[in-house]
Length: 102
Image (cartoon, rainbow, N blue to C red; front, top):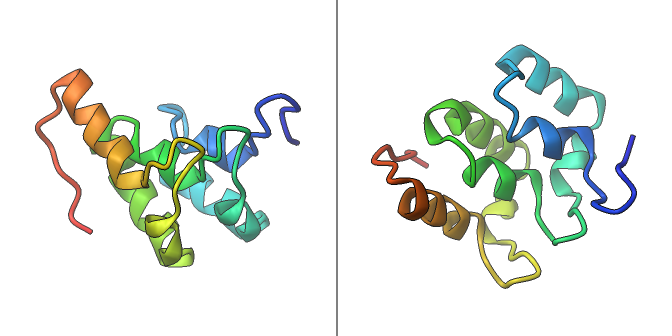
């Protein structure tokens, strides 16, 4: 199911959801691996979403997404930002001090 205006797939939504556990996240990927390569209306991949969310919780999501689509780390969104920029913005705006080892 795609949300029409946002063009977000379930994997996009799961990438930022605190209610999704790792098992469910993996099942979403198994059900439709192509979703990791799909951009939403803002040009964001699920990796962009995961990098811009709570870093402690999303560490495993980021790792899983990079395993199945490593090129995603070099794909820019509609604002010319890489997933790394989303992570940096999260840290700046929310004062996060955690980091993700990639």
